[in-house]
Image (tube, rainbow over all chains, first blue to last red; front, side, top):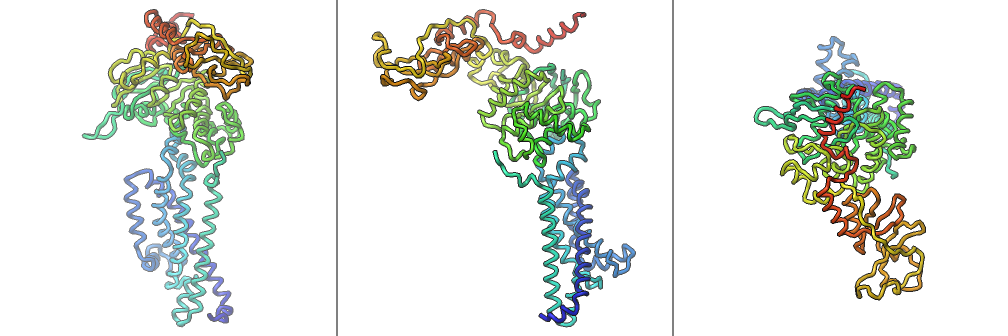
Length: 216
Length: 401
């Protein structure tokens, strides 16, 4: 471990860390926002479930490097534009979460759904104010996987030259020098840990009823 | 009044078509409890759900007060109909108070106003207001069921649909909920359609009973007494069960049973075997009725087995069963005699004071007499068939005022 090298490059590493944070966080959020309506669609209409889940599965199998290379052509962006990374990772998150959202909604007890209908809820209102809140624990669990996987996927974009923690792996590889690689791994783990904790806490705050203990 | 007009519901297509409800025509009277009862697969829940359009009929019409339910926007229709679902179906993520406030909030009331109404309703169904802050998971099954009833009542709907609301709780709690429900209905006078597979519950709660057979055929529609005493066909007789004759006695007031004088002992007084008269059957227990200061019955004591000189306490007593009051049915009277260790049923007055005892053979005589004479019945109107009651109502309505 070469502490001097780390000291000399602190500023650079910090700016990569910041870039890494938002490059991983933004697609996670966008992917979730897109997955909610699509997942709800897949849940509500059985015919769309198979189609959407298959499409999502295919999307997820496209290698990330290929997607990073192809997207500029499709989007008309320059290869170094971070937007490519955001779009690619949003698609991966979406692919992961469509199924999660659909299955999470499916996990809501049918009796509760029927009861909302019987009370006179319209479908959208029932979905947003009854079923979605009850699906939060399952969606949260899926979101944690997506967020952590995004943290690791972002670093692949280093091959294109997009600045973030992945650059540390390139530098280490090119110089045959382990210090930046170890630093990169540790920082990636740290970012993943922070994301995981934030999601965990958010789910906890949003679902007070799950901790309501029986005191009959 | 809710009317089913040739209503059928077919599930599936082609070879897999099954009729859940077949050509059902029935009129459900306003302000009464009508019970749909039948085995599983008889289409009782399907029929219930066609009233608030959770299930749409394949053919036929459902009318509420003459209005075709299809002409009303389904969610709006449902907000005007209380619904108590099996296992309560409460929203787990909302507090009890907010669960009860559901429909008023949907109707556009402010959350504050809706919660105020909800708090009152909690009290009405016998729950402390403090329970409003809890989540459903923190309540017992019986409490959840009460919240379910409160939620259905929140918008004060004229019609209530109840789908096996008490089936998921233990028998003791169920009996309690049924009694409270009967009391509540006496105050509210809602038009209630109640679904159950339990004929005892149907007989206990219903003003009228619709017995449905598998495939959604209406086998009989009549008062509970009528269903028990004159089942329309073998299916109904079978469904009602073998002791229907005995249970039908519930609907006849015992009336003027001969009440015999019964010597009593005061609880706390001293008793000893000298109480047993010399001509009593030797070797047999000699039962004496024990009462408290207010002459209310507490139990029976075997005078041969008390140790002399000690005040009688509750530990010495063998408890009797049912008591025969002024309004008791023949069933209760017979049960009182049969469940009493002495074979004599304790008769009480309106203030629960002992007035004597009733013998089983006297009850049997009364049953014989009731069979021969036109029955003396609980609330005479209830005992006619529903159809007849409806006709009478219509006739009354036709008289110009």
